[in-house]
Image 1: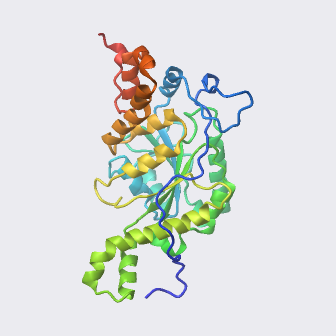
Image 2: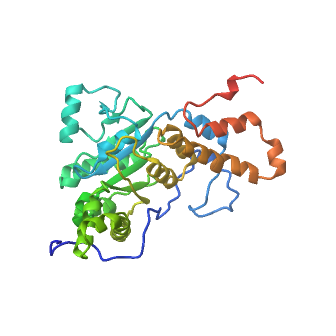
Image 3: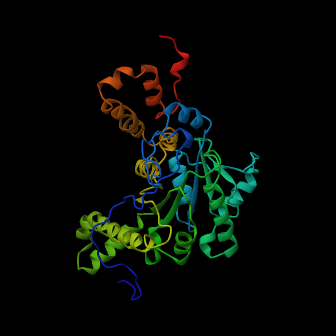
Length: 350
């Protein structure tokens, strides 16, 4: 039986992991925007960038940088390990390229005492750089101020190389009685991340199985019958909690850009495709989308999907005349830009 103070929200209309509150980021190379809008067009204008200049600019950005936030035991490190396809701990750098000794690394990872400026890098995929918010969620005013200062600085950085490209905010379903705390509301009300998208991750979804079994038992079902209906019940609970969380955070001054659930991250080979795709779609700059897709190791299918969707289909839809004018090597370069280990066609003859 559930506690009388259980804050489980009432059943709501189904809600799925969807993007919300789309924002328009700055042009990657603003001077080269080719929008044919009228003078005085609104800031919501969609920009199309000069690919060659954007490609040269993005070539200097070799790492995708993510700030990971959330309560203690939200499964943050496990998610990063799955994304980077490893069980090893990351190496930690001080932000100036100096590695912190391994014995210090183990202690800081366990206690969460490393600084937010520190860079967490896994040797299995050094193209990802992670930062950890380091416990502001516990209620420390100083840590909140440090985090806010870091976020504002990185969001306003003059170059893409220096700034955070995305923020993952983890909310564990093990805490389903308090999915949205004062700390989360404080962040989304006071921290303007600008063009850096914040994606809310619902983590430790396996906790919903116990809750589903409890509710089914309360409905009078035997254990065997409850097990048969548990998956459907878990899906219902996820929809209910997602609607509840969205209902609270979307009212904040700076709500999340998207929401996604991540499941079975504790298992070897867990699927991170949904997380990567959600993060990619939350970004407005195609150069950063390309960087993330070519960096991730979760799915080659994503590389193919975005190469076709973002490059090949627009070329096909550009019309017969433009297609004949397309340089084959340029098209190859654009397509291969969505894949890891980029192949430099300019160095080949023929």
